[in-house]
Amino acid sequence: MYLKKIEVQGFKSFANKIVFDFHRGITGIVGPNGSGKSNVSDAVRWVLGEQSAKQLRGQNMQDVIFSGTELRKPQGYAFVAITMDNSDRTLTIDFDEVTISRRIYRSGESEYMINNSTCRLKDISELLYDTGIGREGYSIIGQGQVDKILSKKSEDRRELFDEAVGITKYKRRKELAQKKLENERANLLRIGDIIDELE
Ligand code: ATP
Image: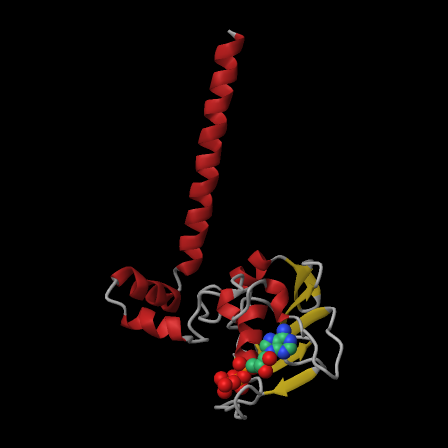
């Protein structure tokens, strides 16, 4: 699997629709300071489901929408799509190409898609678990993550190994199941109280 294409429109400094085509091997993005190099990796981080505006160097999520310049009006929405070559079926979905996209409007309304079908963020997370490219993956190494690798705390380093050996998915499912169990326990207590009151 490899990243074939990134499409951005109205995202940060990219007012117009721009398509970056990538090929196998290493690609470098070069440009003067402030020209938008980091905005490209922000776009990838965002489309994979980043929920923290701070991680994207903004105050709130709508800050990713092109805010206009002296010569151009602000955009009403931001859109990013990344396309991965999946001919080796690294992603467990039966398509040779997988496109994940995300759109956000100024109203705050947003949507995710996998191959042009609307989906939940959870579907994207599940598709990407244990591939290293999810929200918690290590395919985008920001400064904080370098700290994580070097961290003295074994739990921090453990997260990276969990993702690499493929157990993140099961950990998340376990957490969800535990949460559900807790809710059910609380419901049972409440039912018990109601029964006591009625007796
Ligand atoms: P450096 O080499 O200095 O790290 P860079 O090439 O990585 O710079 P970025 O940090 O990606 O540059 O881009 C910064 C530019 O993006 C700034 O000019 C900033 O004004 C612009 N920018 C960020 N968010 C928006 C937005 N919502 N609307 C318009 N422009 C934006």
